[in-house]
Each structure stands twice: as C-alpha cells, then as structure tokens.
Length: 68
View 1: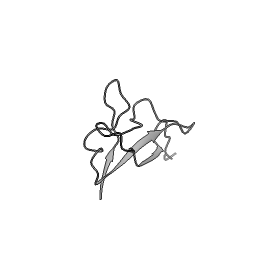
View 2: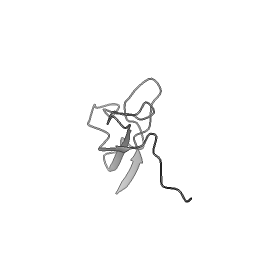
View 3: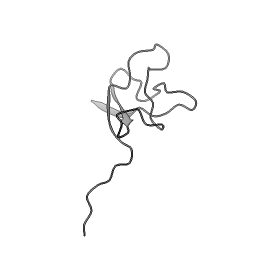
View 4: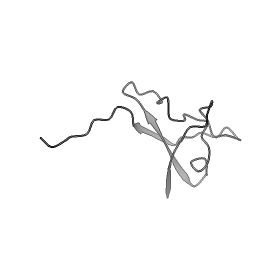
C-alpha cells in the first residue's frame, strides 16, 4: 500500500499526483474543528472527480508531549 499526503494544488482543493493514484491511500489534514486544513486538499480527485482523500486525520496545531 502506498500512502501519500493529499497535497494542495494552488487555487484548488483537488487532490493531485501522487495521492490521486488509484493504488494510493490519500491522507488529508483536518483542524480541531474537524474541517479540512487550509493547506490540505479536500477533494475530489483532479480529472475524474473521484472521491479523494481516502482518509483525514488531525494535522494542524498538533502539540506533542515533551520532556520536562
């Protein structure tokens, strides 16, 4: 399985290559409000309007645990 970021085509929310490939699992980013991040494509796929990204996950303002 190939996993690729949904990316961002300037001026469009369409998903382009390489995430647009049928064999690729396209991953988009969402914010705390569960909305597509401004820097992430939300679909559909460029060309044939197929549903992409395949999955989204939190990817904006993520704060990881840190050592004291």
